[in-house]
Amino acid sequence: MKKIIVANWKMNGSIGFMNTFIPAIAPILTKTSNQIIICPPFPYFSSLTTALKGTKAQLGAQNCHTDPQGAFTGEVSAPMLADLGCQAVIVGHSERRILFEESDDLVKAKAAAIHAAGMTAIICIGENLTTRKSGHAIDSVILQLQASLPPSTTSQNTLIAYEPIWAIGTGLTASLQEITEMHHALHQTTKIPIPLLYGGSVTDQNAKDILSLPHVDGVLVGGASLKAEAFCKIVSAS
Image (cartoon, rainbow, N blue to C red; front, side, top):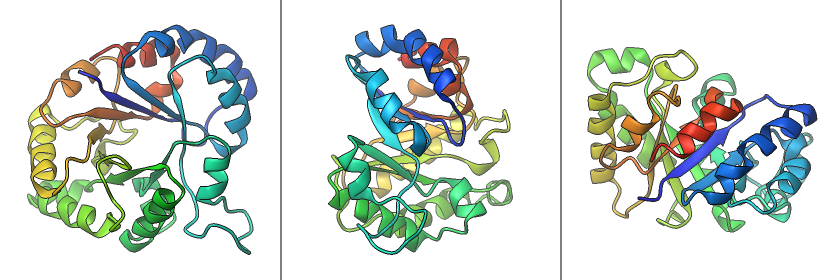
């Protein structure tokens, strides 16, 4: 079954990195039947667009502003990203929510802007360790999801990425049972069949098991997406 693999490079990469990394993963990007979205830092959009030509991979972004234009020094709008060939944008990642204090309302507004620009919004949601241990993880994440989805949401223009905050970059991964329970609850919550991704220390060692779970339509990959051999294994894991 076709899966969705999203690579979030975060604030990593260089021209030199791409000159070796992209040729190393190009063969798998050319032959895979999966949907691949690579989200680099903004400065490398042009180089990555050129490097991805001839492959099936799509260009994605890690953030955008809510307005299409204006006096917002240092910001990048959704129409600008679309103009550069971007097809999807990550919003609401826990690092944005925590470090930059982005609210559900702001995430919703950004997702609406992405939809208006004709792109796919990858909306991230997830609970912290305190909430998980309290036994309220599912209720908390569902409320976050409901508050982050704009009215423009459809099954074609939105991906939902469940990322338990306590598992991002820590080496910890939610158990298969925890992932199954959360994805089942999210599937039951959404009135339309929005694809559900799992993120949180996804590696080439656990990707196959995660992707085999019900209602897991793909994965959002962080650190492992910067390692050519590991990323190729994740892409082919399904």
